[in-house]
Length: 125
Ligand code: HEM
Image (cartoon, rainbow, N blue to C red; front, side, top):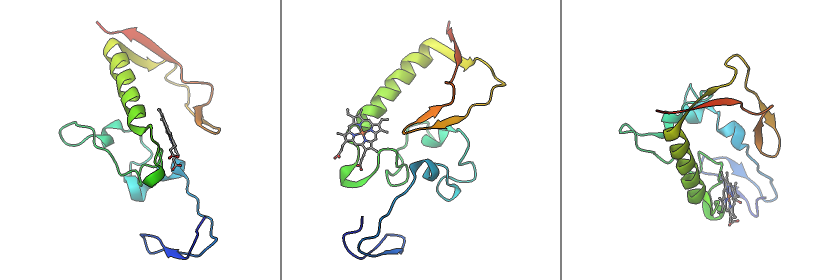
C-alpha cells in the first residue's frame, strides 16, 4: 500500500493509497527478465563462466522478496538446498519413473507438482 505519492525506479508513478502487488511465479518466467529461454528448466543459468554459483538480484528473483524485510532464512535455506542436493546427487542418480508422463503444477498456497514427481533413484558406483 503506498503511503505517499511516489515514482518507482522504472518511472511508473503511484499515488497515495494505491495497492501494488506482483506475482513471483510470473516474474520468474518473464522473457524480458530471463531471456527467450525463460520457461526452460536450466539450472546452469545460475552459474558464471567458471561454474560458480552467481546470485541474482533479490529484486529480480523474488522468491525470498527483497529489501529490508527480505527473508531472514534465505542463506540458511540456500545452504540446506545445496547440502541436500550435493549429498543426494553424489550418492544417487535420478530419472523420471515415467518419462512419458506430463509434469504439471498444482497451484496452491505453495506450488506443488500435481500427483507428485515420481523418480527412480539408483545408487552411484
Ligand atoms: C525456500 C525457503 C524459503 C522461502 C522461499 C522463504 C520466503 C520468504 C518470504 C517470501 C518472506 C517474506 C519477506 C517479506 O515480507 O518481504 C520470508 C520471511 C521470513 N523468512 Fe523465509 N523463506 C524460506 C526459508 C526460511 C527459513 C529456512 C527461515 C528460518 C530459518 C526463514 C525465516 C524467515 C523470517 C524470520 C522471515 C520474516 C522476516 C521479516 O519479516 O523481517 N525463511 N521468507
